[in-house]
Length: 261
Image (cartoon, rainbow, N blue to C red; front, side, top):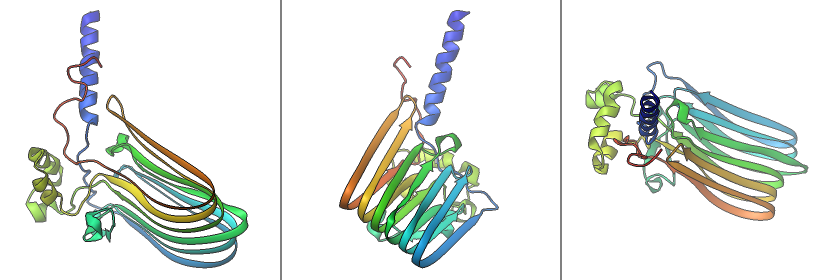
């Protein structure tokens, strides 16, 4: 009985490993949802702004906060769409900015701040593995008396929305057809169109006096562990791109096949 139980445990582990190696693009809901916020703010006084978006259908977790007391200017767009075909933006990190990408979340921020009270805040963007994402996250933290920042944040996890109209394929069969293309990257790119699934990251240009830093993490059990951490205190200028992307075709074998798991 012990041998049978051990064999069942190993088989379960191999099955688990095989399912977490790569995730096919998520199917967007039929009754898709959207959110958009555009704002321009300029003035002096108490600042308290925050946005949070959690969507299990997209494997998305997003937080963006800032609080302080001083001179403040903000020009910001935040947009979210379960149908990524409806949210198209040019990113310098996608096709060198020459082509619009279909995204599920996009944020563009231009911000300046100066005050005796530090502006404290941060940003967190996570593709949640438990809900079909890739398990990668990027994070920004800051406590600054002066800051001038320009930043784009972006997230994508879904397949093309109208698979019936474009390919004549039911949405729930899209991943199976995609899997058949395997290493034929040209075919996969054609099939996916402008959907850069799975993608999570941000691109920042920043000048500040205070403390500013970033964390990036991508972890898959039995398979992958990537960590990046940076923190700066003082007067600095920084340009940084943090991006995780996974090829949307699932593996056909377990990463721990042939070894003891």
